[in-house]
Length: 108
Image 1 (cartoon, helix red, strand yellow):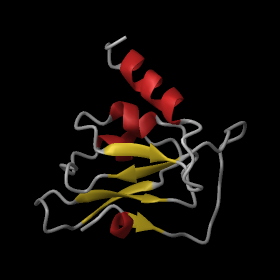
Image 2 (cartoon, rainbow, N blue to C red; image 1 turned 135 degrees about the horizontal axis):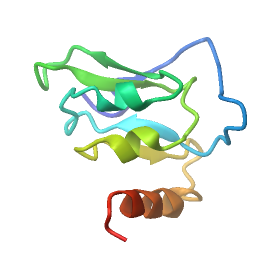
Image 3 (cartoon, one colour; image 1 turned 180 degrees about the vertical axis):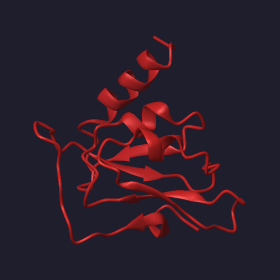
Image 4 (cartoon, rainbow, N blue to C red; image 1 turned 180 degrees about the horizontal axis):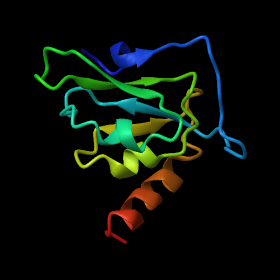
């Protein structure tokens, strides 16, 4: 299963007040252990676990319609299987995400 196959679409949309749409979360399914930490930490509840042949716990999937790009799931994932990406393909927020991850994980 690839990253593209783990994206879930939704017809509903809700963005927390004051949230700035930056990028979107994507799950590297080959690294996901199904630990559910990202599910618990997501403020918009846009991450769920689906059954997978990759591991017996399942893997996380992101509902891109609800993802606000807050980066909390990527910060909390102990396996670094959550990455942020810009749908337009730009790298405009990539440096900010990487600095935030390093700082919050104690590398900087």
